[in-house]
Image (cartoon, rainbow, N blue to C red; front, top):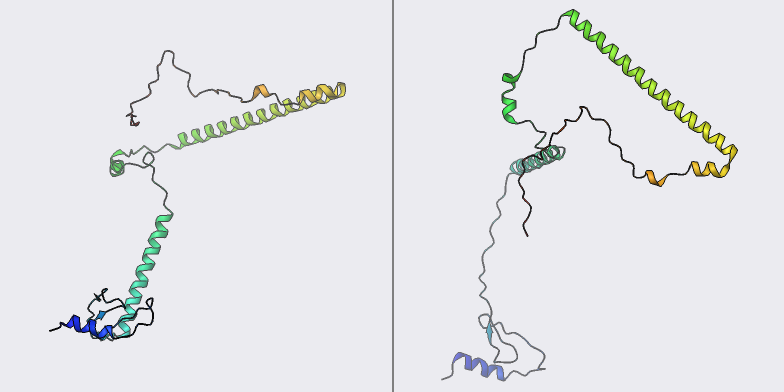
Length: 207
């Protein structure tokens, strides 16, 4: 007695083949596809049909409320991003510790009010200081003008005497570049004072 596979192979042997390169599938036998070569028998995955789910009809007012909530949420996120974009990166050395902010009332001093005579005295002193600094600035400007005028006058006289010497005089002296100057400090140095480098932790990578 022949099995089902034997009957199927016998039936397929009677089917004429057009070309060895052309393959076709038989799907009439429970999801089984068979090419021209009977030895390459393989089964396909089972496909189970399912009825389509019936879509629920929602109230247009509910859909509109959902869209409004979504729109408000996006606008809130955009405002938050715009607000944070204007903030600079915090600098720990410049920020005031929260402890000092909490102790602001304890650290504040109630200074006595100044008398009218003291206020008048300080105002006059401030005016005198402003006048002194103004005169000092004018004196510096006048001195610079005199130096520049004298220099230009000397160059003009030198040019009248010799053109070659004038060209040499206006050349840039390469020995003066780079030019370094150490200006005066606010307080005079302390003799014999050894400035310390301070405490630090070396976190350099050890090779």
